[in-house]
Length: 404
Ligand SMILES: Cc1ncc(COP(=O)(O)O)c(C=O)c1O
Image 1 (cartoon, rainbow, N blue to C red):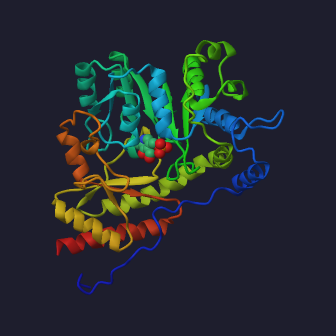
Image 2 (cartoon, rainbow, N blue to C red):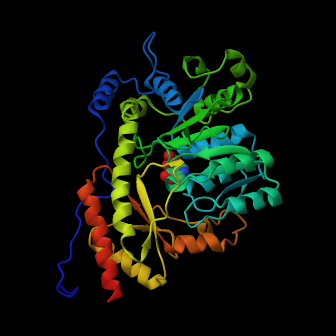
Image 3 (cartoon, protein in one colour):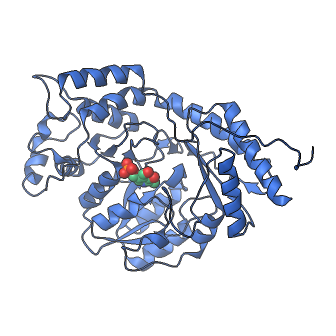
């Protein structure tokens, strides 16, 4: 059939529809609503709060000594920067390709980012990182595993060692993932996770900070807004650590509530199974997209244990207008693709060029080139494998129509 007579397939499922919260979480949330004990420090005598239990369980899952819960990942990154000792005016190395909360946290700490280029595999460019570690004399590196892409962590670890960089990992997109059999968040001194609605466990909003360091966790708990109730935490260091910091650490009131923790705990228990389901869907889309001539889904190394909750692919040699047409046409057929190449930021997507609250906007031609060609698509678990096949087919059809 010629493309003129070919029936246009459309996809009707929603790209922003998550799976329901497990029944156990709903039941516990109802109990909390009935008891009214929603605040983490409002517990019955002898009771351990849902947030405290989640912190303990999450630290055990990741394999760190401690965890502190927050109201978002963005604010936990801010607290991580404070705990690392970042002072106003300090420089923080970070990915040029990341989401707005990351530069937002740096700005919140009064620091200045040193943006590092992005590779065509969508990871941080380690050659540029090393050069900028040398030339900027920064002592801090906030590594964002944007869209779950994990760089060669052996090289990252060497660079951090050689340049004495304090590494904070932004693991918003890597919960359940790792590198060479080691979880992300365990390479640096602090790791930060998100439980915002599109992440791997969903409480609408929320953040989890993990570390092995006694001093860091004491300060993080105090910053999170523990008043003088830190003793009710069960993922905590000895009381002397709190004594040391309790009068010199402001309460920033960035707590997680019991309701959020109650619905997260059962999700954490099934996370590994969910990761496998995401990766099945990713593999199906990757195969379908790689069969299209104009598309490349960059291959990933064996060592990278990623979580395929979204997929990125490169569409080469399309002009701005043609790319816009492609995205609009996919949209009309129900396939919603994000693009960081728009001239004006929109929706969730903005780039370093629109973060004008920093005085200097760097020149990063390589990142611009990668983002101009990169398409970004969510893979919710509400999609079946069949749905993923349909999506790849629609993308192929639209590209065939452009080629006409
Ligand atoms: C890469 C990345 N880092 C950090 C965050 C911040 O997470 P939150 O929304 O929980 O503040 C996000 C949010 O989507 C993100 O995509």
